[in-house]
Image 1: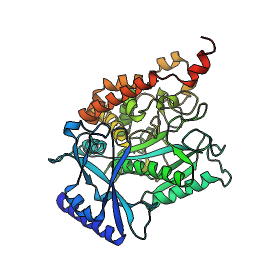
Image 2: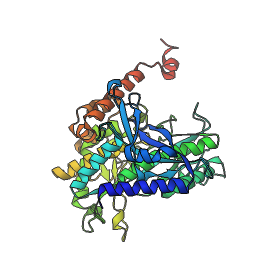
Image 3: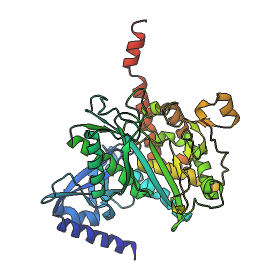
Length: 448
């Protein structure tokens, strides 16, 4: 089947669904370089033309897209991402959505489109014979409203809290995600008060990046409908755990998990060990992408289950990379877990740099260091230094400086996204460092 024919069949499928489901409006979704979801709506009368030629829009106001003098963009809907929006009416004038690839008016992909960036990195893996699968665990908080961080419950990890609003919120969210074709494995209360987690089923990285964008919107939508606020801010409450996005990942060769070797330590193959080594070696320079906000670095501190040091092991949750224990008969589920990313990142770019780091380890045959099963937080600086355990950047500024020098990240993101991302993050840091905070007023004003 040719690619053109496949696109034609996809278009026929979308047009048929639109008729059967009484769709009147179609929202075309895409993201800017920061992972903020953007969209515009078309009516069903425009759908066939949009599928064939795309829909033009002005990209000059989209973060990291284009300058005013080169602003024309085309959103090309991906027919494989057609889904009804469950929170909109369904009996008549239903609303559907599709993710879009962003193209230039003269044809060809727009290099500033994060979805295209991920596709390029997945092609690199495909050229090596691999498909990249991921399973992120996104944590988030429910608050009374968006004006503060008043929690809804005082529960802890896996707590069976009373039948409060949060229990029903998770239930509604899971049902809505499943209605949109997103398989869910678990949902539970997390470690901090009013903190929750819903885990989506492991799948290929492009589908999962789309799912992450959908997940974040659905969580917020359900909260809004119930009069509360959901946030993926990495560290919204001082003295409590922040929200992470632990990313389970593996490479497949066809139907075979390339990370599994029954005779290897931890049942890991040589490819898996090289991939881990790549993640460890390049972790500091990709952190600005996986943890892209000033607030991200309030989470990456000792004492709150977030990784600070560059190490790996099987059971140790203080390590940056963890290897979940292999279960007999579940060879396909062999995977590694990167624990540093947070749920406010751009998933298209975050998955891209993770994959790039791992593939670099594979291509260059990196050797993985010895695993660290002891609690890294309890070691002295001298002990960590003697064992070659490095650290992640401690601030957005430090992360930017590392990323700016990274050939790996520039190659993974492409010049356009790389330069726009670095520029944006420098502006964010400059705005942050010039703020006068409540902490400074309370600490210094009475004594200075």
